[in-house]
Each structure stands twice: as structure tokens, then as C-alpha cells.
Length: 580
Image 1: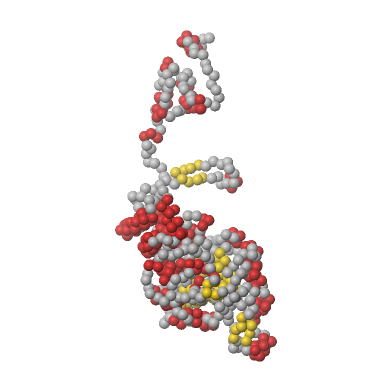
Image 2: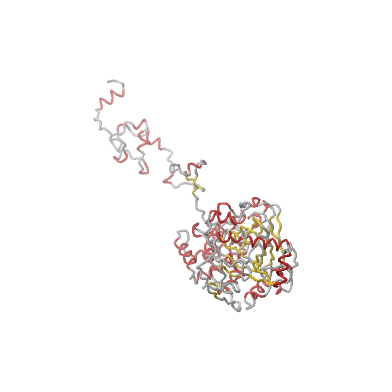
């Protein structure tokens, strides 16, 4: 059977339809008693089909027709535009260092009006839905949401989506909605009292990291610098697929209020079109109202802002083409699309708001969100992050915000590891236990606590008791052709040097004296260098040793050495005096 979204259809929508096999074991993190939301099942006959895109009948009372009942209320909201918003006109100032040092608040939304390359981001220009389909493939499956019923449509591909976007009837409808209805349609509506309009469809779940489109897109530099997946996940091939999404929304799309899965933050860049947001700050009270709203039986009939006693924590935002928005962890938001739009974005976890991320994850556990709507491999990633943070704590390479949030992450890791039944978490723990660097996961967690206690006492600084291992650096020629060739030299250089060498490795200063002091008359006696090592090659080059008789192993001989007749003492004396 298929899960219709019912209560969660607006929370996690199409973006979170990627299946995850995680079985969460963190339900004991908090025990807030709440009524659990229910899920309804629908058979294939009840779910809208992909070819049924012109069958929506909407009441028309002389006003503009909207695909969802909450859109008029959304547009009527009169809220402050920049109440909780950081607007950045110079994108070069937005860096990971600026966020960690507090020059910008990572818990408040950030709007970047500068060009994408100013924040180290690469995006294609003038990208259309047809361009995307041609790059990825017209048969590539996608998840499409019917905005009116917030249900998933079956069997859609990118080719189907292109046909829908370019449908002449839909385009005519959009133009009439934006420019006004013609007199002919007004007469028809006056006669029938109803109007038949195309379905409004939304696609917000196309993860394209392993498609040709990925070569044209690079997330903002500050995102790549703090993203836990890039920093801590050990295997490139099995990374959670949440970092790169392409969203294609037609005019009139609406996504109801939701919090992004796993408490992830979001970067959001509009390639074409326009997006309208209503944002609600994630205070404890606001999240409690939001959670109660999720669990109400008539949740789909309620407009969330009506449940707040004040609008002080609500704000409106219009995101125009070529602008970028950063939505922090836990922010409740709804999105309306007034124009056909193509958006590039991604979800990521980081260490600058750990507590809020854990809070949202706990909310998902309490409300029993299905696993396929959650962040994939969340617990396993958190365990790898714990190992990564242990090294950073020992090196003193953390900021104050991270130190404030790490106790919350540590408590969660202790709980999850004690009752580990999630297969990805079990595998992560086995890999860590098998590593020669650490004794066990328990030792890692204990060392994290010790490092946090040390930092609380002495401040953020490297741990002097931890011996830093020398790192080997690989130096390659600058020419790129060497990289593709199998023949090139590798030079290894240790980053740390020994202050004193062990006695058996020290260079012998009297080595030449030992060689010169050998008596020629004792040539018949085999000479052995000190230290027990064979120096046959260097010894043979010494003039004073040419007449000494050395024993060279046969395995070291390049060519057979002919045997020489033993000369008498008289012959050696005559040769020395130059006589024949």
C-alpha cells in the first residue's frame, strides 16, 4: 500500500520520500505524552494518476482560483519582512569562520543578495526543466505532489514532468491567473458556477548528486566547510543523499508549514522564478504549538499561524531569482510559488546548532514520523561525528558554539549506542571498534567527556598529553599528466621531526676513520662494518679498501666476479715500488 501524507503530507512532502532503513531507538530521549498522528492507507485506485492532470474542479466566487485552501490566508498575512533576518549584500563576508566567530548568527535565517560565486557557489544559468531531463534522462523517476490534496502521484518520470510544464492548456491557465481572466471564461464561469483547471504539481525531491547535473553545481563554500557529511562520513560511495536537490515547481504550488527533517539546515538558490516564505522562529513555545498542531485530527483544516497568540515570531520573505536563502535548524516555514520556478538547494547538519538538531530529531521520534521521511543514516552519521569531534577537541580546533552543543550530542550517543538496533548504527560502531586508532566506542565517548571537562577547566586549547602522530604528505609534480601516468616518483615527508634520533639510527661520524684504519696486511681477514649492516657498495669505492678482501653475498652480485690468483709478498712489494 501507499502512505498518503494525511497529517505528515505537509511536513515532509516530496523532498523526504527517499527510503531509509533506519530503525530509530532514541524514543527515550524525551517522554512528552502526546496523541499520536494517524496515517491512512490508499490503494492504487485512490491515488491520482499521472495522466489525470486536468480534472480538478475548484469553486470560483469571482476571485482568483488557488490550488490549496490555505494559499489565500498565506498571502493575506501582514508580517514584518526583516524581523528575524540577516541580509548580506557582500557574499564574500559569509564564511564558516564568520559563523563560528559570531559575526553572523547561524540560528537566524540569512538572505544573500550577492552573486552566487561570491559565496563560493557554482550553479548553471538559465536551466529549464527540459535541460534537466536531457541531462539526467527522460525516464528518470521523480516524486510529484498534487498540491490540492498533498498526495503523491504514481509513476512519474522527468519526461512526464517536461510534458506537464510545457502543456499549452496549463500555460494558458497560468497566464490568465497572472494577467486576468478573459471575458469568454468569465461568461462560462457565470453559467456553470465552476471552473475546471489543471492540477498544480510540485516536485521537490530530486536528489541529483550521482547524476550529470552534479558536475554543474557546487554548494556554498561555508556549507561545505561545516557539513557533517563531508567532514565525518568515512565512505564516499555510501554517503547520505541529502546534499543536492533540484526543485521544479509550477505557478501556484504551496507547501504547508513544516520543519526540515532531522533538524537539518537548508541552502536554497532560485535559478528561475520566485518563492514566497513565511518563517516561524523555533522557540520552545513555538515548537510545542507546532507539535500539537501535527497531532490534531483536523490538522489539514487548520492554518498554523492562527494558533499563535502573537505574530512577533512570524515573518514574511520574498526570494527572487539569483538570490540565496539559508534556513537554520528547526525553523518552521511554508512556501508559495507565484511563478514557474527551478531551485537548487540542499540539506545539511553542522556543529553550530547541535541542540536544536537533536530537538527536531526527538520531535520526529515522539510523533512517530515514518523512517522514509527522516534523515537517512542519521544515527550512524552522528556516531562518526563523535569520533571526528574527539580529534578536534584534542587538537583544540573547536569553537565556543560547538562546545556548548557537544554535551547534548554526547548524551544522545550514549543512549543510542547502549541500545543499538539500527543496522547503520551497528555497522558504524563495528567499523570504529575495528579501527586500530581507538579501543572501543565506549572509550571514545568517555574521552569526549574528558576533553569537554578539560576545556571547561582550561579553555579551548590543544591537549598536551595527547601525542600527535606524524603525518605523511604525498608530493606530486604539478603537471597533470603525471597523475594519469603509472610512472612517477613519490616523495614522503614527515610533518614532525624527531628532536634526537635513537642511538642505532645516529650517523656515525668516525665511519671514514674506521675504514682508513684498516691494516692492508690484514686483507685476508673479512672486514665487518659496525652496526651489522652491509656497506659493500660504499666500501668498495674507498681507495684504502681496494686491496682488502671483502665477502660479497652472491645475491648482491650483478655479474660474476672472476677469481684472482693469490700474489706473493715479493710481487706485491715490486708492484708497490713500480717495478715489474
